[in-house]
Amino acid sequence: MVSIASRRSFLQFGLSAAGAALAPRWALAEATNAPQQAAAQDDPGKVPVKSTKLAENVYLLQGAGGNMVLQTGADGLLLIDASYAPAVPRIREAIAELVPAAPSAPSQLINTHWHQDHTGGNEGMHAAGFSILAHRRTRDRLSHPQVMKLFHRTVDASPAAALPTQVFDSTMTVFRNGDTLDLVHFAPAHTDSDIYIHFKNANVLHLGDIWFNGMYPFIDEGTGGNIDGMIAGSRQGLEIADNATKIIPGHGPLGNKEELAAYHEMLLAVREKVAGLKKQGLNEQEALAKKPTAEFDAQWGKGFMAADVFAGIVYRTV
Image 1 (tube, rainbow, N blue to C red):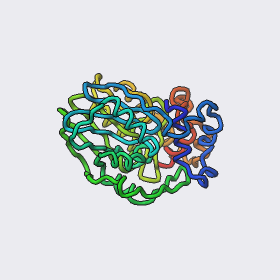
Image 2 (tube, helix red, strand yellow):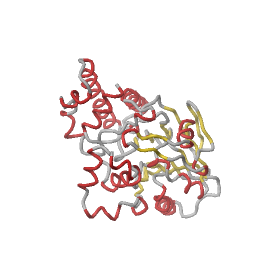
Image 3 (cartoon, one colour):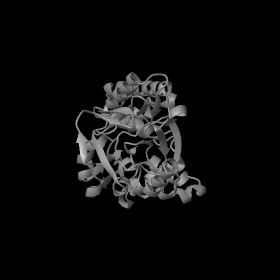
Image 4 (cartoon, rainbow, N blue to C red):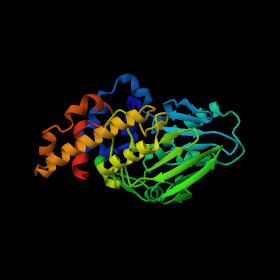
């Protein structure tokens, strides 16, 4: 489940003051109901970055934004995603604890997609010596203002130093620190810029925001996201993984194939229910009144997205 700190950070840095007045009911409720003790964690720069060893030289890093992965070795540091901009000092502290003497070889940052909870730290990590690699659409999205439809908010273009300087269109292979990394673009799913990164020797798979582990996902319909793409993307992950694969979601705890399969089945079932109601001629509000996610809410409805908001996105993108 996404932590209270993460949800509050998203609200603070993901909604403008004007947009907050138009924010969905669930977002305002999250801000209202958060415990007082979380107030000190409103700033992503105050949220510690926790590291978990996944393989000999591969670590999961978890802080205020999306889940990150660090690979170490003589070929240079490799980091997947960079959280929010204020989190950069915390990220660098976590890296320094794992690698007190950084290798002299160039470091590289890979973005899984364009959202600011994954790319906000790009400029700061670039200043720390990381070159940035991503899908071409991630660079395109970061280069221009983007509309977050659900939040009624326009995200400004990123500064030049935050833009990827190396891009690819479909697939790319990176040989680094004794491992082979497959980078593959998904068809539009969470956004139109999503990729996965598969560390083949370490057997670690980062799915980005294709997977929200243990919760309903956010699908950014304003930049190409749709439920069918999320289903196809989670199916791709299942085809790649084996029972020993450590699977990194964009948000939520470290997962495995069994947990990803449960998420995939939930997406399929909700899509079927919502599509059936839409086919009957029900409009969005009428379909939501039928509570199409009811049987899943106890397990999946306690995270970032409220059930009715998720079901509405499914209705609009099915």
